[in-house]
Image (cartoon, rainbow, N blue to C red; front, side, top):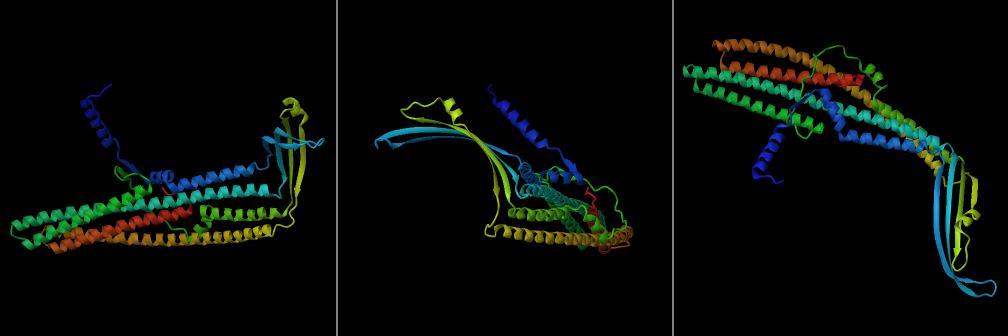
Length: 442
């Protein structure tokens, strides 16, 4: 079917229209952002792959006790001169032979190497799972930080927009006074300058909001911040008594994945010592095979293929015992290396515990400081808001000049900005502290 030029134009227009309006605006809450980030983050996917690799290693070691079974087939040809034992004459001879066989072996005793390898694989798998939990927790904290930064810049933008409204009202009033001859040209120019400065601050706040939103979408692995928005955090700020750092630490030791991973790797190091020590012990294995062959000489009659297979059938069973006597101190050094690795893992475990305690201490003191800052900022904002309301009333009846009004307005904007910053800092700090208590970030 041949499309007309008109149909092609209509189809192209519909395609562009669909591409432009197909994408609906979306608005996610914090939990949705965290869930999406975890699902699409490349580091998380790498940690998932590490778990799958450890599962394969565990499965391999699990079935190491089973017997193996191998089949073998060979075909060979020989040709050349051969001496006769009767008259010392030489003749050219060509032969061919084919061999068939099955063989199996079973490890009966490996110096406990197989059970130690399996136990080691299980510990490594658990450690990989703990690493994945830690990666998810770190990503959740990063998303929360970016999310709160977007909310902060969003509210700062609203404050800047309100300042423009106030400055515009002030300019409108000043223009009326100027037309009545009650305001000088210089004072009117000052009002216009103040409005332009507020507009510039609004543009800067908008840019900061867009950059914060871009940072969040990039962390979420979204292609673009267009058509994307976030929802405000639910709930009011509460000021319950904060749990002491030592209590939080004692509880966090029981479930934090970085501690679990370090403990599991210490257990793995202990198991590695036993694995290395298996090199000192003898190893016993059982093996068996069955085989047959077919042989022909050129120019001579040969038995039938089936008869030769029956006549040439051979069987073998046997046990093999390997006793280590001296291997140039290789096993001894492997045991020593495994013990050093255990010491390193125990040091890393202690380091993880100390790091966790320091993080909890810092989170606790930051939360208490943020709470105090929020309370002070709230009181300052209420005082400045009351002061600005009174100043606005005085300004509207002509009992205050532009300088006094602008000063009160600037003080109010600063107080509101400080309050917003203190609020979201407190929100973030308390969420981090609750995170160390085991509460999910939502």
